[in-house]
Length: 591
Ligand code: ATP
Ligand code: MG
Image 1 (cartoon, rainbow, N blue to C red):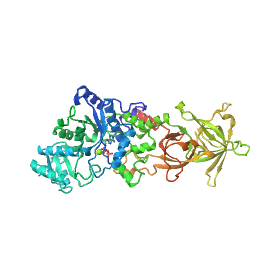
Image 2 (image 1 turned 60 degrees about the vertical axis):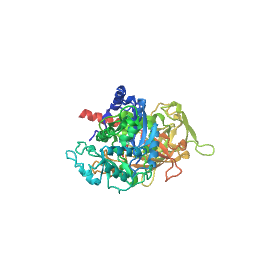
Image 3 (image 1 turned 120 degrees about the vertical axis):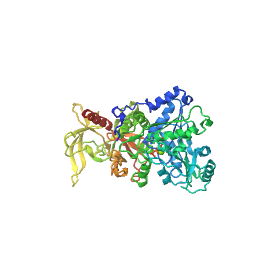
């Protein structure tokens, strides 16, 4: 098992690292290539998603790497859809991916599609057939798979391997013309059935699929495999550095083999054939980054869609209020390595918190309201409680954010948690006889609590000290807690969602093999709360800090209370990452 905290976990996140700009073996290699005039001094990369789902945080690492390596070295980066599988792909995903890449902060030099290259790939397949380097195999998929043998086991050559080039060409053309049923034949590269690398044992290049493709329509009924499409698409576009994740390491030999046997020079790009380099995937504990399983979560209804804020998709992180710059900084911080590792989501969250701390306006909201009555609060001439406007700082980290006026009166909402009838040791908030400060308000001392027949506290009574208007007592007496509040007469109702990790275990599915067995049973808690009036003006997508509760991102109202602004908690305020580091250091000392 990999170290759950990953190799970079001992350093402190600063939030200041460039977006992926630190030194690593890939940048070293690109620099060396430029120095040696390999690729004629060009740098070109691509991000090649398959449009069969939404992008997730793992893809963010690849996107940051592909785009920043290109820009740092004055090169170009394309967004290329690897759309060779008609069954699972759709324009919905294409649009979402284009949008997500932009949201993350990158502008592709061009957007391309592997399906645009179907003609060229077909022509090159005939080129290989004519040279005896590809053949039509009539065996079914299971026989082909069995015939490839295994590690240390010999492969068995297909009885069709020595078909003549003209016969192969005729059959291949018939396949393309729709004259053969699905599964009846494939085109295979004729490489080496005894190669120690399984990828090289006559890999499949084309399969018959009588299926509609979302871009090429019904023009094709044979579709190229990933391996046949990928390197050739790189070559067509003039890619120099084809960066991909480690699971493709064994595919590199095949990547090179295809390009060696094709007339690459005819493409007219300056420099050498593209070269594939592999780097480690980004994995997070408590998190699934597999589109297949994410789709299952969506389809089975464990989450409300691809943008459910509990998911690690970019859509979801965006809806939850993660700033794209925080994701980029995180990717830069974890860096690029050649061994797989897993990071704690707390590390990503700490980048989010650092960013939001600097930018998010502060507001007051109460998520589990308890009524507080100030019994000595003055009334006006009509006998109505006086309303006072208190000045509150919008962002202590940013003086230019200014202040706002928050209405204050004799009846307030406070958090249930901020009062205890019986206070445990070290509980410094309200309890009978105790005095606390109300944020941007006065000192109040608790004189009484009203309970219902079950003993639940329904109302807290306090007196306030008018002398403490400035937040301090003139006699110098201190209070140990400051709590937030909302004036009851001015409160706007809000709804807020608080989230736990979607999966309870560090490695979902580790014990049963099915990640869905480890779903957290209550990963979302909905609260009907109240907030100060200014909260009504927060636009969907904007993030605020509700004082003492965390950062919250506004969304459109939810179905249960169509008039109340809805908020997702982005992250809490406490830096859990610091705790993890401390634990780790202690473990390190003990070891
Ligand atoms: P999934 O397994 O989630 O379906 P995938 O690898 O099939 O992901 P693609 O659309 O093929 O998804 O991925 C596009 C690019 O993103 C590839 O170059 C792939 O290497 C990279 N990528 C995918 N997952 C990760 C990850 N967890 N960390 C870093 N890069 C990733
Ligand atoms: Mg893939």
